[in-house]
Image (cartoon, rainbow, N blue to C red; front, side, top):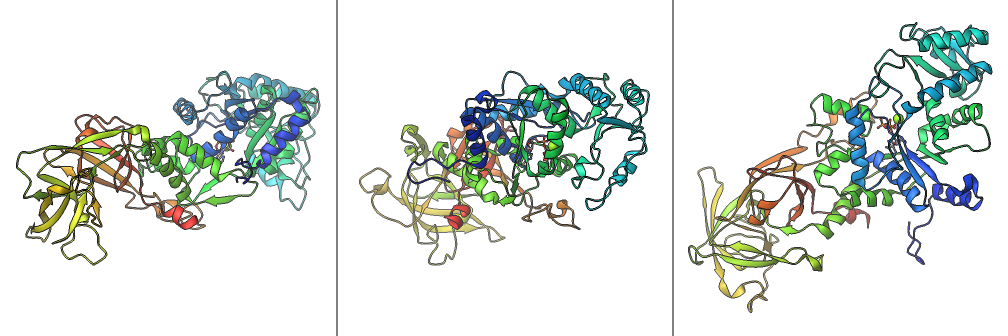
Length: 561
Ligand code: ATP
Ligand code: MG
């Protein structure tokens, strides 16, 4: 939200908290945030919101932002995810403080603190199975049932906890629980589990540990160890906050405490955003991988042709709120279109070609037509595009029997070829199935763009590619992966039922202007009149492959402005 006087937006509620803390010299005026991904999947656009928030605040207030892998669950975590997460954060344009950190670096310290809590009577080993423990927790309106092991002597707890650590018990045999309050209306305070037994190799600590701390215990203590001042998380953790604070009170020495602040997670229409569901799409081959351009992952958006700037400006636009809401996926598309409009060179590409012969143009002649690379960017300059007697135009730019408002080509009608001449359709040919195979036109030599007769007006302007100079490419057109606004929001229907069967269309016979021969993966273009495209990583000099990032049409802005 911009204030009209200054052009600056007003503070969001987290900035307001930070500014108040700075005013009071809380934490000696330090601002230290962290981004704590669990390395069990690739990052998605929701994470991008959190990254922009955490790293952005650190930048804004001259503070620091840690990257901390929340790697407390060895079953689902992998190095591949760690690597992709770092790549994605850097690509977005952020750099973490010093080196990447890992919750697993703190396993020794966390264990020590747990022992200390046992000694103070604040934690106990429970021999009951986890299902029974869950059952005994009961419902918020009635007190839960205390475990028969709740009051076992400290010495026995210390002995059992050590033996848990030493691997004497099988998975699930015992847990360590915090001793808080089995009657608390906040279920998270009903003696939550701190440690469980898991004989599982960890991607960093190997087989050193067979007990692993639970998120609630590990997270706040990691914040404390790192000197985090503002620990930002999504709203579902609000109810955990009393537990976050309770754990800190058990271990903190002094006044310093990290403060947990909750904000609304990003939800996008027509999108699923949980890593578990995205993993399902990948594992079941419903998409080509985590970086499939239809995925809402950062790597998918990157491959689709999004720029870091467009994602950051999207994050800015949606802002930070305290209430959950759903953002129109059109706003994300709007953000990338807006940025690509500024930076993407314009080129000619014909995706569904039909041949046009200009019968009065000399055979064998080629002219170099000068066209603007980007009218939005005065620095972008001009380039030369070859023009000749035979060209391709888009099949749907011609109609045999066009309605009056169709300003493109039809029998007897005139159009301008962008950057070249005005042509008039004299005749056309069809095959036995009624498909147009060739269109015959004449051109008016006086109407060359930039020339003396260039001012003659016609209603339509078409893009084109010279036939003998054209290079071939495969173009992949993407549409939304889901047909439903809230694919994961149906009680008795699986989100996969809403997959859009037409979310990928592959066009193999596309004709491009010759300058595109040098396009390399990730290069971005506006294919004139069609949309924004980028060269895919599958693209080689032998076989060019392009992805459509977004069509040109800007339905979101029309609807909302
Ligand atoms: P998912 O629900 O997709 O599995 P997660 O919360 O389990 O995500 P983490 O790796 O734990 O994934 O998330 C790292 C950080 O990103 C957390 O601080 C989390 O709050 C934040 N985050 C995750 N999803 C979103 C979202 N949709 N919007 C904003 N922040 C998010
Ligand atoms: Mg999580």
